[in-house]
Amino acid sequence: MKTHSEIGAILIQDMPFPKDKPLVHTAWEICRWHHERWDGKGYPDGLKGEEIPISAQVVSIVDVYDALTSERCYKKAFDHDTAVKMILEGQCGQFNPVLLKCLKELRLQLSKMLTDKIDDDKQYYEAQRLSNEILREKSLPRKNYSQYAIKLMQEKIEFFKMNSGKNSIEYNAISGQLTIMNEKKQIICQRDDPKYDVFNIFEVSGEDIGHVRDLLAQASEQNKEISLQVMAKMENKKQMYDLKLHTLWSPLKKDGFIGIVGYFDIVKEENTTEQQG
Image (cartoon, rainbow, N blue to C red):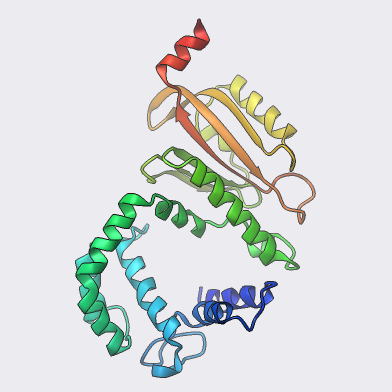
């Protein structure tokens, strides 16, 4: 876990960006040192005080705030005031006293700004999905890995951006990791088993499963998406769904797609009536 900051810095270093640009250098600093601590007890280099670049110091506080206010499998999310109080009281590590003073002065303004942003920008929720990155470093050769990983992440973001507000699917064909979320971005199901039949989750009829598999077998880098209607059972409700699946491809894997992102939406009654007519 403690190697991720070094790996992030290496990824930036390997990208075809001009390294002398201030933004690129700042991004590198943040990636490598956002887990350093003011008292020198952080990682990976044990920097102390002003040895830590100010960019990394700021992101360090932001990172802790985000962890506190986000729900995790082991805890509920803290509200804004509680999270700020915990940071100011030193319950989450040591930070630059000047930055803590700034946080204290801006706490009300930040609360309003963040609340407005969450309400107005649903991309915030989709961004959280990137923590379940479709690729794993050991699954593919290291050469050009970072470029392909970034391209795939951008492709995923664009898909979920175009189809936000719907039940979503994310499947890694390499590891077998599957995450299904409802329209409220609550996890309905999460599995990590390459031998598990992904379609068992939906309780889709055998005929529909066969149809989906046939269409996926025909998918290619030129024709990545399939769309159809299936009868499925989700959250104890059996009904017709519009299912759209977008396959993800990489030149590093020659024998098919490496993952799937998708959505399923309840078929509206009027659409069902029209089809029956």
